[in-house]
Amino acid sequence: MQQIKDIMRSRGLLWNLTVRELKQRYRGSFLGWAWSMLNPLSQMLIYTFVFGVAFGITAPIGDPSGIDTYGLYLLSGIVPWGFFSLVCGLGLQSMTGNASLIRKVFFPRETLVLSQVVFSFVQFSIELTIVSIALAAMGSPLYAYLPITVILMATLTVFGTGIALMLAVGAVYFRDLGYLWNIVNQVWFFATPVIYDPKRFDGQVNDTVLFLLHWNPPSVYLRALRQTIYDGRLPTLGDLGFCFAAAAISLVLGLRVFKVFSQRVAEEV
Image 1 (spheres, rainbow, N blue to C red):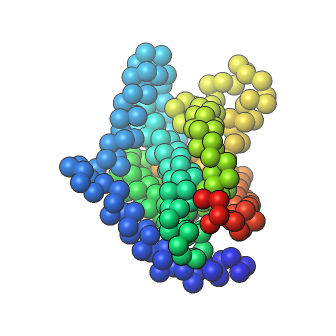
Image 2 (cartoon, rainbow, N blue to C red):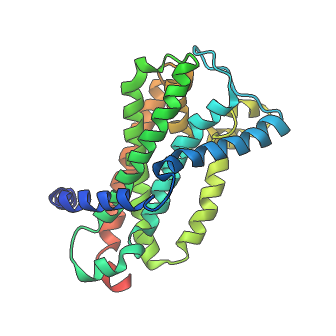
């Protein structure tokens, strides 16, 4: 509880760190914030060619939207996954990348991670808004479920924050964690149905693999978000409950791990 109070008292610092990140991210770039959308678009084009054209994979038909465009199906998964990956990646570097600040000034170290989370959420909101507009233009009745979409975005943010907190403090003591996380991130990406419909594997792989494809946390968040924006319907109560539970567990665990191991951060960083 004291940890939360300390963070709240440092909200001015959190705001300043976030604004600094927002200003610096694309400073000097000709396209600026347009890059935030060009990156997932380039991924969509590559995966569409490789999996949609070369391997002939088709998108599941949205129910009840009727959308069957593979590119839009990809984007509805690439954008949430990209957000989760960005939160974890930036969070992992947040402590080691601010070593001089940590050594000089005492403040709640969690704010360094949270500033990256807030920055990533701003980018995520822009990207998902653009994707939602495209899906609405194609006939998805997603506007009726916007409150649920926002709630899912929030719970995914909380889930990612917990992971980022653990990665941030872990990277201080184990400098190889960044390299290890790159491998884990790649494996997790393909274990999450971002570019494929997991139903196509029914009867082709064993039950354990199907369970992991269906219930690893990013899979559930992507499935629920796709149901609101791609399909245009409510997620199941089971998926919603899982999203809330995973977010709560991740945040509590992340804060606890961060508190235990951040005591000697100024000496180790």
